[in-house]
Image (cartoon, rainbow, N blue to C red; front, side):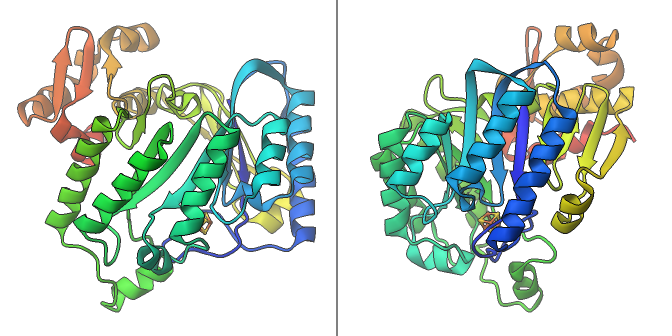
Length: 366
Ligand code: SF4
């Protein structure tokens, strides 16, 4: 698994705390060169089954720049011929020629940051696109890709259930293969954080947010999307293989500013700062994942998946029974109706999905 971070955007959205910035073309060129250097330095013979270009907005790079990166990956790794190769794109940053180019570079999955189809909300969020552009981009994307994912947000300022219902109707009409949902979180350092501090962010009431979540999770399955993870819904056979890899503890390489890597024992992360990354290439900070942390992660990452975790897999991986380590946590959350047991499997209930963070916190032993 390979993740490649492209930290550039045309504009900073009002809620965004991701590692992204506005850059000119020469900074982007230097960044691409630094990326290629890092890929060359860390390449090995392992077969790559998924590649994910995330950001930022990877489609702010030219096709030529993307081609250089893909070629470097092909040169220093062995890309499986059936690899899932995803790129995140934002409406307003791609046209027909660009999409055709992405396809010819080998991308076979497009993840579109739509967020909403409502013009007022898009403006509040500070997105560069309007509703019409979002619709046209999804339609165009479907002409070139048979695996298109749409991101949808809820709990937004001024959002109502009626507006959300309209967004879901639009999803029904557009028929993407995959939908990811995100509840707005107000993060420090963002425009929304400042507005919220000043009491100027008209967020929906908590119970309305809960109703929004219920509306989405109840509606998407009626449109043919299976929920396979807390925030992800897919038509049959269109689950994201890359993200599933994170939740099941696979090894991955992360290239670019702020990207993380995991070799099964050690997690490393590159410097977040783009200028430092370009200058020093991968300034890596290492963190050994202790046995305890690995056991905790196995549980709280695996529980994100609807299928949950397997007690047998836990035993195979760590040599102890899951009940010997987390018995009290599992029992407590079963009693609260947040976890359920089914044979070898332990998984979240519907209610547990809504309160996932509470359950995950319980799996942290210290
Ligand atoms: S497009 Fe995405 S990464 Fe870029 S500023 Fe907006 S939310 Fe952040």
